[in-house]
Length: 115
Image 1 (cartoon, helix red, strand yellow):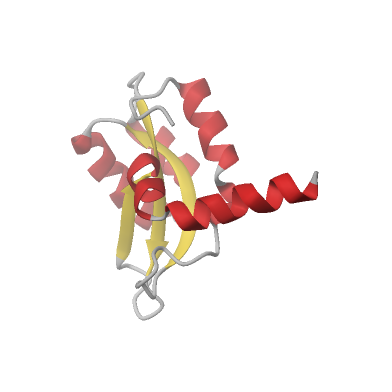
Image 2 (cartoon, rainbow, N blue to C red):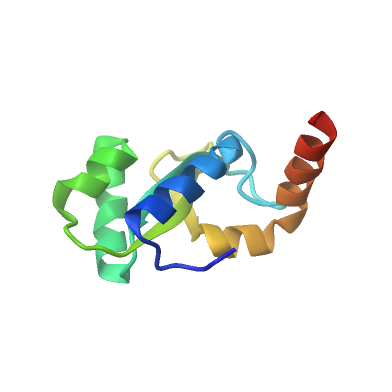
């Protein structure tokens, strides 16, 4: 997988490809559940603002459109803790896949068997 930054079309394709992660555990030893796979700004300052707007609006598309005017994007995996909805965990998709390769490869194996 190519790592960020992505163009908007690349980020949209990647984001769609990984939507199946929603509802899955954030990690092997985590009690957090993935609530969103979203397109986010690439640079860290804009990504931090995106996260704040995501918490406020509870909607990734609205958070992205709120003020980001850049051309470089990332795709992030967002999870929340069952104890505190405002406690977010997030990783860019490249990092998350690297940490959780077994979850991704199981999905790939299942799709190959389904064909």
